[in-house]
Length: 154
Image 1: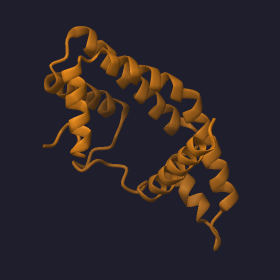
Image 2: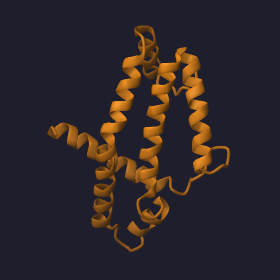
Image 3: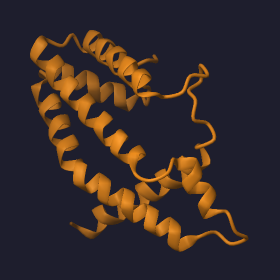
């Protein structure tokens, strides 16, 4: 792996770890509901419907989008399923008068290994979905990303 890619990945995961720890207290979405497996499945369906409608996806494209969603959910479950819940993990890092740097590094290493293990499947699913889009649909995706809005806004 190229050094700049490795640094970027570790920086991103480090930031994710810190933000995840800080936001662990906010384990509910803005409607006050927790993110149970049922809620994730519900949101998966809504996201696929919304993206399918905005991009006017055909059946084959919808299937590729569903595979991508399933890979992302599997990675999320693997991420969350490792050890204790994020709040407990973060509380362990700040339980003493000094931040547990070694514990944080070990946690980061564990999460990085998880992402590196599942990452190729996520990348393959994303590539399969994106490559199945026609040029106009790809343009819509790029424009949506340029506007920095999620699929539910704007």
